[in-house]
Length: 365
Image (cartoon, rainbow, N blue to C red; front, side, top):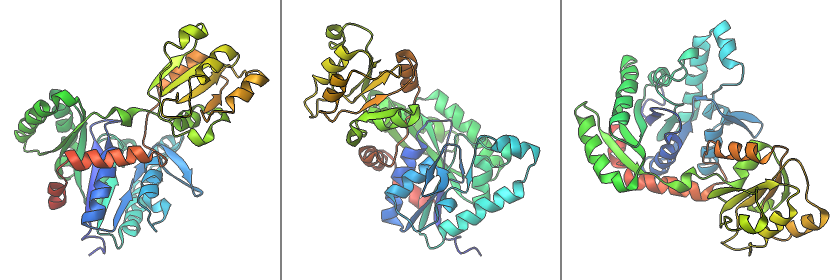
């Protein structure tokens, strides 16, 4: 018998991308830490990775490691990271046994001595099938039950749950239940009742119904800086500022100021000194400050403007792209909770604790 066979474990998958697996995983980690410690985390297959302590790991592993410190090796928490040529190379020379062994060995080392483990998947049940490690395959390999996270609604989420459930069932993996996420708050009760009844007809439990939290969908200035590879000019200490709205300064300064609001990111050419100074003039280094300024075109403001920029602690970033491209890039960001996002991690844990039947999950695994 494996030394980790008695560990409480659950696999968190989703019906698609960006449904909230990480939010749910955060909440489960916090709950498991209290109910059956010590708690461990693994993301067997990761597609978005970062360098952490010299090791290439999935970004969700870096997040969990920062919130829930562990003596487990980072490589064991993220055994497979899918790089640029990974899929192509695997198709040319498939090695399913080696890949499975790597995942299983990492899991055994990570789970040793743990009371509970959260396993986070990647997308829907079939993601990873191209290299023989779909979520369904990995859940079967690790001998774990699954929770599915689905988007808000009634008909579509139930349809998607049944599609995913069929692949898990084909691999002999049991579905504990479903958590709906990003539900319109005013429809929360009605959707919960309808989906509970709809899933019950299929023999599936609804484990939770989480309302949409706009703050979890807002990027920070730090994420913008990292994603667009800009040059920091000022305000590095305020990169955690959360962006509520984006304003493109392509008009006269007095007109643009009508749209400047606390928490906005102003995108404007670097030679628009009038607009830059006017926007910074609205800042009082308090809670009503704008989130930051993104200077485009690779053009630095004049020296006296740069001197004015350095006074308030507002993040100012210079990039080479034009304003339209910059605005498009910001709007296209996939917002993920990051290690520095303390407020978001606390919010994620709170809403899972509030809206998900955690005792039921602990009883089932």
